[in-house]
Image 1 (cartoon, one colour):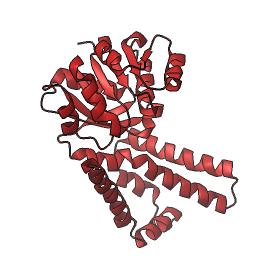
Image 2 (tube, one colour):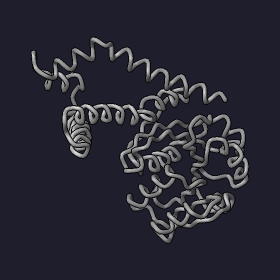
Image 3 (cartoon, one colour):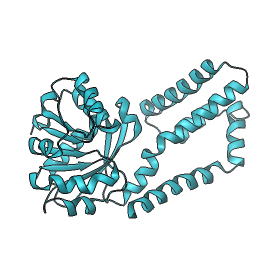
Length: 271
């Protein structure tokens, strides 16, 4: 099956939808087989400027009728209403990228037997380096999963989750995760300024160090702890820093922070 032969419709044209659409185009998906509905025209104009062959409209039904797959990318509070609106079009697959909206909520609004996939992407999808967690309902077959993977991989990498409850965990790890890295780089940047570097140089030091460490970890493929040990010489500067962090119980603090994020995701999903 050629996944790029499918017409993929998006309801909602916000940042995440635009990131996925740009990724699909970069991957060679035909612009004529992308349809987008959005109530306001400004975001649609942005997409038309990217490629004039993208079909744009204010009608959700119009997009759903044209599409094999529908991606729900509206604000979470609108997902159930939109799903009910397009239920009669019976798309092959409905994917939601909205946080906190369960598959049961979406299934209840759609026609019985509709394949549903939840996709929890993250902010780096905007530069094609996202990490998405996918989970499917019981009627989603391998073909629909292949299509869902194709859409998710357009903006980065994907992992399939065995159960929906893990969406809350992946929200805490990779969904919120970029903010943890931003905070670390923010603090490193602030330390560099404190030590006398200009803000521009401080920013460059923080960003390139983060980028380089990530690239090396991916290329090396070994344990992260081993990479850390390699740069931590006994009695050296890095050891002094690590010992200071450990003395302040950074591991427990960080685990507590990630757990708080997961618990909050669970709370939001119950509202």
